[in-house]
Structures are given as C-alpha cells and as structure tokens.
Image 1 (tube, rainbow, N blue to C red):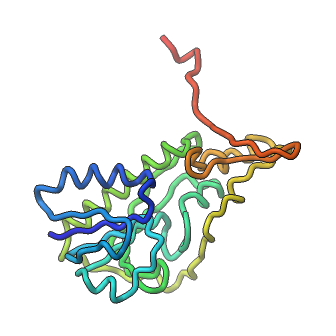
Image 2: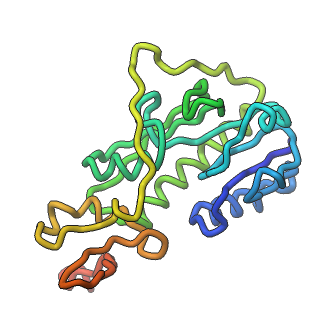
Length: 219
C-alpha cells in the first residue's frame, strides 16, 4: 500500500510515534511523512495528523481514502484541541475517533472509535503518550482493515458542539487562585511549546510542572 502522513508541525511530539510506526512498517508498505500538502505523492491512504492546512476535495482525490484522527466522541467536540479542552473541563475518559476527511470540519463518516483513560494526576507528556498510543492503534486498524470497512455517519440526533482554537492566553494562570482549582489547565500545557504562565508585578513567569518521587516510596 501507498500510505501518506501529513503533519504540519515538524516539532509536534506525535512525529516520533509516526516515525517509529513507519520504521516498523516500511518493509510492508511505501510510506511518506510530510509537512506540506504540496509534498504529497498520492496513493491508498492519507492520514491527516495535526494538520493545519485545508485539504480540499481535489487534494483528497489523489488517495483512495483520507482519514483524520480526532480526540472527541464526534459529533461532540469538533474543532481544535478537543482532548485539551475536555481535560480542562475535568473529563477522565476520552474518545478518539477515526473518520473520513470532508470539507466541513470533523463531519465525515466514522471508521472506528476507541476510549482511553487520562488519570487526574497525568501531566502533559503522559497525556501525550496515552493519546498517541491510541492514535497508533487506530492507524493499525485502518491499514489492517483497508477495503473492508463500512463507515458509519455521525449520529444525526446529536447536535454537534465545537471547540475553539487554543491561543497563548488560554495557558494563562491566575496567581490569585489556588493551584488545585487550576491544576487541569496547568498540567495540559506543554512547557516547551505552549507553557503555562502567569503575570505578577508587571512581569510574566513560565510554569514548569513535573512529578517528584515521594520519599516514602523509595527503598
């Protein structure tokens, strides 16, 4: 099979997972990972992973199928960074949807959904690992079952909801509020790419959050 991955951000942490998958599968398939749609070669499956470009019908026609992996229980949670918004809202069980790309955002037919748990103590890198591991499972499913899937339309009885694009201001923490009340907002922030921060006394401060070993847990 000819398989393409389009991930717009070369620094996105999902790239490591995609490259590992490609290394394991390159003897079975012809695979490319690109950052721009102009670099796409065409083929059987195009996976759009954290893609910021508009992939129109003409672009999609170069492939037998074009798939998106979206971290919400569609049609709920269409839009941007759904798993981040849901964790901020306090959700622990998240849904990952594998769907066909369409011109209308996140509206395509569903190939498969899987659920995964994000513990309340998990930080951004641990959250990423759970998310990306689940994405790899859906990629495996799509490739292993290619040509045998009967996609299902999204539930027409559920009104779609939408999340907005996250902006730097969404990572701002209020220094007058407790850490506990803002913990979900802090723990989802990637300290390298989208750090949590607060402003105080006319200055801006970056927040870095990491776990430390409890002395009682050491041998």
